Image 1 (cartoon, helix red, strand yellow):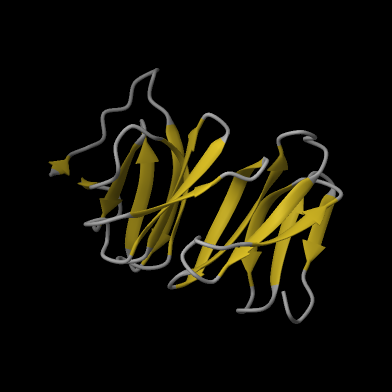
Image 2 (tube, rainbow, N blue to C red; image 1 turned 135 degrees about the horizontal axis):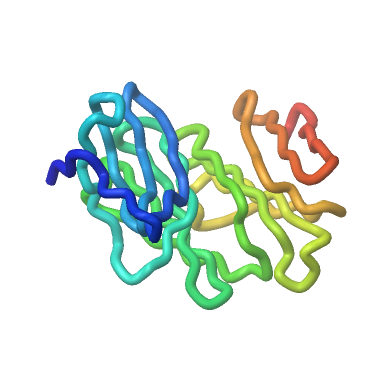
Length: 168
């Protein structure tokens, strides 16, 4: 389905935007879209229903991770076929993801705040599409995360930058 252009009004909300593989990706009014022509036209990406999507990371036209909230549970949806099918990995830890980065197929970095104490936070790493996580507690909440290599990343928050060692 081509939508030309996206209908923006005062109630519209862009949750996230990304670029990969010469395409633009957008979460707009809780739907995911893809543009192959620099934003002139947008196609709706098939996504699971009944979730509030707020963040995503796109590796290429096939590999996408979407984050959604539902009553203090973060759901991580992963596709390897551009959105034709999705796997759902509910994350029931006491935290909310604020950012994530899909840096290789199935390999995800994330960061976020502790629900019980918004002054502390976590950095998460999964090597199996979000099924299992290595979790590191931080004294402050990281808001953004990115990777340099498979084993080196950086996260930042208010007045603080965290850089990993050579093994993540």
